[in-house]
Image (cartoon, rainbow, N blue to C red; front, side):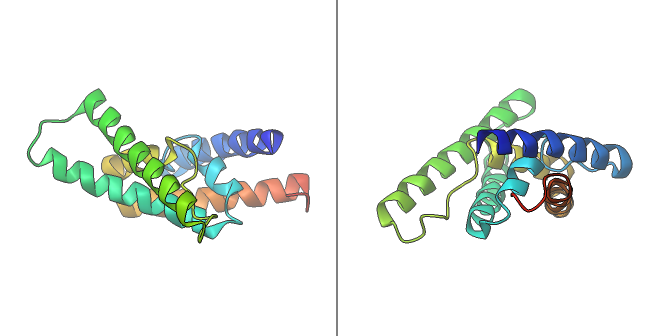
Length: 148
């Protein structure tokens, strides 16, 4: 799994850079398309991650309505909120054992997605991220073959 993760992250970095240069949109952070591309076969994990990112985006917007957060402070708060929500979801799903596959991907991935939702808009980020993750997976299927 570790070598497969490395392949996905490396390919995701290239695809993310290409999307940024060609279209001017970020795919939710440089490493995010690789992680999501790896987990495309686990749709509940992808849904949990994107849901956590969207909820984080909304929570940070609400917080910014009454607190002054910008720059590094906004980035850290966004990642901390996403980390906390992901941790809580992992804890809850671990005790329920009903949807064991509905885990949040990574620890900072939802925070990175939420940061880019805030910077360029949630529709643009989700569309770019989805396309980049699918392209990443397709490239690796072509390169590695059916071993994924």
